Image (tube, rainbow, N blue to C red):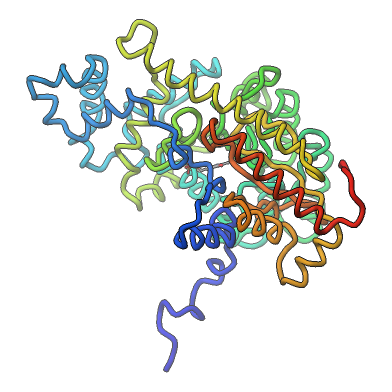
Amino acid sequence: MAPKGLDYELLNENVKKVQYAVRGELYLRASELQKEGKKIIFTNVGNPHALGQKPLTFPRQVVALCQAPFLLDDPNVGLMFPADAIARAKHYLSLTSGGLGAYSDSRGIPGVRQEVADFLLRRDGYPSDPELIFLTDGASKGVMQILSTIIRGPSDGILVPVPQYPLYSAAISLFGGTLVPYYLEETANWGLDVNDLRNAVSQAKSKGITVKAMVIINPGNPTGQCLSEANLSEILRFCYQEGLVLLGDEVYQQNIYQDERPFISSKKVLMDMGPPYSKEVQLVSFHTVSKGYWGECGQRGGYFEMTNIPPKTVDEIYKVASISLSPNVPAQIFMGLMVNPLKPGDISYEQFIRESKGVLESLRRRARIMTDGFNSCRNVVCNFTEGAMYSFPQIRLPPKAIEAAKSAGKVADVFYCLKLLEATGISTVPGSGFGQKEGVFHLRTTILPAEEDMPAIMESFKKFNDEFMEQYEDHKGYSRM
Ligand SMILES: Cc1ncc(COP(=O)(O)O)c(C=O)c1O
């Protein structure tokens, strides 16, 4: 019989090429083991609420009222909800055209886009135009919208950091473009060297690839580094020289665990640079409600802001956004609440600060416990998690372990992570899922398990790692990168 429409052999080849390690072999095995009754610690996805983080009270109160507006007419509403949550729910309902059950403008509710623009002005000190801000179903959808607009075919290249978050490799494969890697330097705290970027572009050119865009993830996933202002301005100058649009993935901007290098946005650095850069470098920056102390991954709220993008292109992006009619409306309200938080003096302010600080301070402590824990293990080295939600230790696998992996038909880091999973229930992502230099192995874990569970988790990791190294290493002792 002739193959039918959705038969595998007729599928879009780009779909078959997509790889997505974060929910790959390790995750599938972990899910199987969980079904068999084994306790699994899922540290493969930056999904804070799944690991026990409690939602912030105020935004949930506001959205609850928006979802159930009849409560606003209940004479007892003031007993159940604070006055500021009631006022804010009325505010957001007034911005919608028919409440949460109605589609919004395909770019998002104008009043919420204005709140995002006001936030960007406060954050960066430069005006932002709400017409150039689009709300999206999580940052992922925004990234996909922009990549699909940029990529015409395999000769369009996108510079992507390696290691990278696999959204980029997957989306570039899906849209049929070419990923042009640039390597982050582990020994330089995952910094990037502009000369390396130049080499990557000229090598791509020699293969007939037109590099059109550059992705940065700041703070980094999986690498956790915060880019310095000097590094960002070098990158922006490079984009100017090469005519690239910079895609600034800034979803972890609230997740900072050191004071030396606070988050600084690509937009601020670009505007500070002045003309010609500030007038000419094309920039799209992305943000989300999934990360930070919000961690509202399941709500699927995000936005992107476009700078120096030609109006005709903005119209095309709007047209394509219109195909999906409207981003999630409840998530738009989460976004409004995130960018326009409570102010001192508001009734719920103290509680909001207590909750949000509590989350961030605990993450900071957990980042330290993990880094120190990994660095105390044999053949493991790990840069401190300056930001984001991950620890990315390098595992120096002995040659015998690499051989054993080969015999088992596994990539060496997958082999190690599977053994770790079977022995301890800790579900991680092998570094090969993010890209890494040849012959170098890592794993990624989130820093999200509950703080009180952390010491035991690190202890069981250490025990496993000691036994693994004992089994596969000829000579005993520590080796360092
Ligand atoms: C670097 C990076 N960008 C984007 C996303 C996607 O976030 P969202 O939930 O907003 O789609 C993630 C999620 O983990 C991420 O790590």
